[in-house]
Length: 432
Image 1 (cartoon, rainbow, N blue to C red):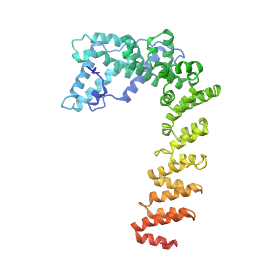
Image 2 (cartoon, rainbow, N blue to C red):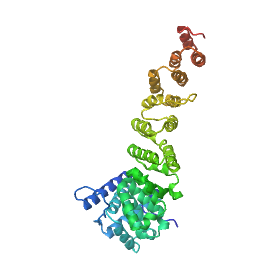
Image 3 (cartoon, rainbow, N blue to C red):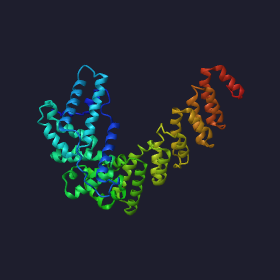
Image 4 (spheres, rainbow, N blue to C red):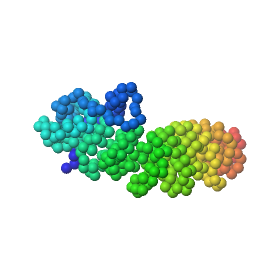
């Protein structure tokens, strides 16, 4: 039977009260980290070397923790019934969950392991909960203190069966504290800790290095170890792009990658990582500010990479600073007889925000591209404001494009408002 975890997301969502609160978990993790640092480093400074966090004992007794679990389990059971919990019961459940998570944030893996062994024989807990108490305690610890969850998993043994949870705990730890997690991995690797040899852990550690010390992550020694294993090297570049948290980390990684490629020109492995990395990054970079994204592209992308990135970015329709992007797109040189990516970008912008796009187009310098965009803009706004559409047509220089626009926009306007269309044509000496 599939284990029934005490703090299962599905079960708690059934309460309908947001019992599993990610913001609260973040607060608890921050509180726990502060307590651990102050216990180990009274000065408030963290040493550069790995340290053993002192065993933190919860002020709650085993009986109190057991009571919390029973209460939480009862609330889950009630949520599965036909009667929805009252507001008072919801508030009570939220407080019980808060206390449970706060308590576990103050326990190390040895204390949790001891608690599990006692609860397995408890006569108070329902049999279903008692049988799955280890999985439930692990799930809580994974959320509030993934470092201690790794220690608990090591005590559990049975590593092949637990390897997904081991990787998950390490990655959660590394996400919030990459330096500490990486130091643990390197120290434990030297000691021969079997957790560090679990499939996927070497790749996870490399991804953390890419955040903390990209030059070392790409060093010959580290890199050769990783690419020797096809499973670890698969999609590595894309995985790195998905792991790096912010523009600063991405900029540091790309600079380190460029330097390594200069040391090993023609390296197919580095080229593959770069290609996969940039492919993934370009699907994420539109979430950055204009300054962050354009700065990285201008400083670290080759001309071909920049053109590929711009072509992809031109299809994004919801940039936060579209006018800045449009100005930047306009300066990019493209091969002869190639459609400029600015066209696609401004066309998408016209449909999303015609007023703002029109203001930008009004101030754009004269060019064949501007004439083409004015033609398209007229067709975008003609149904809502045919007078404005025709005014844009009049901005197009004399020639085939203007003649076509006058004919087609005029036809649309005539069908909608013949008298207004005729009056405009008469005022501007246009043949009807």
